[in-house]
Amino acid sequence: MKKNKAISTILVSGLSLSLLLAGCGGGGNKNASPSNSTNGEVSTASTAPATEAPKEIVELKAYFPGDKPNEFEDVMKAVNDKLKADNVGASLNINFLPWSDYGNSVSVKMSAGEDFDMYLDAPWLSMAQMISSGSIIPLDDMVAARKELKDSIPEQMWASNKFEGKIMGIPLGTTQGAMNGFLIRKDLREKYGMPELKTVADVEEFLYTVKEKETTIKPFIVDGRRADTMPNLFTDYSNNTSKDNYVETTVKMFYYSQKDKKIVGAWENPSLQQNFDRITKLYNDGILSKNIAQEQNAQTLFTQGKYAATLYASDGVEGLKYLEALKIPGVELEVVVPYDQSAKPYSTFQQWNFMCIPKASKHADLVMDVANWLSIKENHDLLEYGIEGKDWEASGDTSFKQLSNYSFPGYVMTWRPTLVRTPDSMLPSDKEWFEKSKLAETFLLSPLSGFTFNADQVKTEYAKVSPFYDSLYLPMAQGVLPTDKGLKMMKDKILGVGGQKVIDEIQKQVDAMPAK
Image (cartoon, helix red, strand yellow):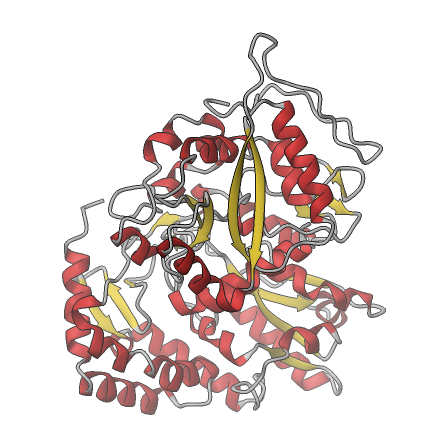
């Protein structure tokens, strides 16, 4: 995964999903009977053993980013009533802080010793600093003692989201990796008499046919900032899969050669060079917009019916963003993922959001009891989707129908791969790929799983290298900068500002990783 892309994509994706989707030691009884919610009310009948004395209720304070959801007070009352009925011994006091100042606000509260119990942190926020300063606590023993929590997150996801060998936060995610592809106009494909698209070549034929036959619909659109994913999409070389020698690192523009066990720059990755050439041809042929570098409204333009295809990722979010297009008479959509059954995609299984416990909290065990309670489906659904019958209704075991405007940002607390529901409006092909992406067995563990680059030893050089991603890599990924010229400039400029020191430091840290 790419760190900066995570900043722009994960926040938006998490927020988009929250807008679109509506045990042991924990006191939450996994044998609890389902709540009777046909009238929009939540049953608060106690499921705790009759011999257990009612526990004193401790209020747990949480800080999370974003805006308070609509109808939040009603749902929180229902959540706290059920926590009491289940004799967990806790109630939740969730506070939302503006995204614009969230990281700084939490850091100030931590430094001032404010008494609170949980918050969202991430590698792209302040997690590294919080760990190094001892400001958050390891959770290994507490996770091991809570069956529902432990079982709701796949073992590979726990193992791949440790920091210096320890669980420093509950990893929050719904998929184990992303399957990338295309969202296309199915009605146009059928109009041209084309069979179901299976390969990148099939998609390209479709795009060229659109360009030839349509006067008001253009072939393909993507926001300029998101074009960095296209080199791994418009390719016949199974990039970042078990058939590819060059594996993505967490450091942009640098790759790991499995054959040579060496870190190389993008200019030394031959398959990447061929992908750039392919994208340049698409740009020159008018398949990609001449305005791609400045494009910021791809979603709107696609949903208005002005384009025939766009990018897709099986994260449970991307496909949902384009459903407005279905309101146009005659429009049909489908997902195309060029998937080589013989080449599993690599995944680091790393997540980008974590629920952490400050060292100053006096209630760490109780926080984990609540996390365990939230790992039981009926409790998870109550906080994430709201009051059943009032805010949502079930469509089978894995889908739901939204009934109100309530939308909790699950990425701060409740996301569990085994518990997530999808909207009943999701495209069948989208749901199929999303369900595959939830399974660890869909992916192959990346040789660099667990690797996070620490730039402390090369801060100056790394700061000088990083801007070339936007000024050189991205224009090549957009097709606007010819490959041969762009790669030569990239090599000269990166090495000219001390980039070899960055390469050597990445190599040193990769070599120091434990053998898998």
